[in-house]
Image (cartoon, rainbow, N blue to C red; front, top):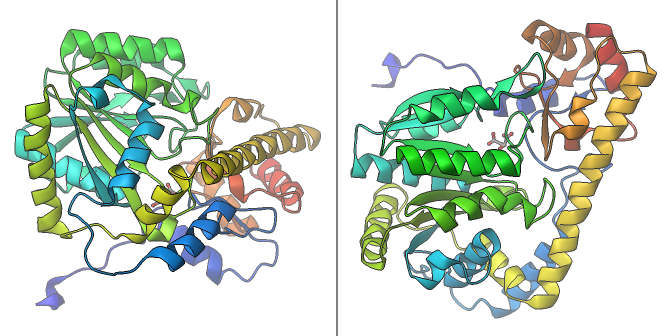
Length: 396
Ligand code: LMR
């Protein structure tokens, strides 16, 4: 049976880690996969996660299955984190939600749910978007179309074109928006632009699907959810996929949340049964561990405060690294102005260089980045920034 299969190329993002590991250059730099790194290039377990692990070790008394929807304290804590305390949709019981295996698991089951509602739905994604959005949503059998988002020449969002395109989206179609820290560009909508997106959604009747995987990495835990809260406050239906991979550093624990804001409590209950049946048909039940840790952190006031500080520290470090890179590039006489990197937010930046220049960075300088020119800002350090800036100046 398997002899009919043909080999596939490495994943455009994950494949970079394998290539980086094989490289014997002692000065190699990994700006590929989006994981947070400290100055030593390590991805440490966050202090609050370590504390929660110790608590869990003492208190967990069974490995029996958790409820189908997941750990309730996790779901409630995450909903509060994303939507804010006392959110209208929460009070009105218009929310269905399940813990999912990572943000990816959430995206996938939500795509399956959209397919169940209407198989002809088109999901509109930004051009560009995170590479894995396409298989996660497309493999559910949904149509995918793109809306204009980022202009590489000016290194900014082409909002007028985006808005014109969204005005043509038909009622019931779904528009995937990045809640904050746009992956791959790092270019986020400002408040006015979110307000306009809301107005267009109200006029056309499209349904926003917000992927929020980097809450806290942009401006703050609160400011990063401006858009999703605005939409959730004002529209009858909003879909949300959230991830705890980055802001809790729980990458391998696959911890995410799928949220459906519906028009009425009755529809929310029905939707809850449907999403659980979708999950049951794919992976049955979510893993418990990551959700249990987040539950402990978000529902223990001291730990929550400490966790918020840890997120702030990561965010500030990445902001400083952006500045460091931009300054170094200017100092080394780069022929291109990279100051736009300072305006971008979160873990990623688009360097807005060509695929050929990226290829040279990888092959001639052992600097690993996604071919679109996306770099993981957290991969920069005081010890590699000079080499990185020099390599960039050479390939420009
Ligand atoms: C990324 O964008 O690099 C991360 O979200 C990891 C992944 O799965 O692609």
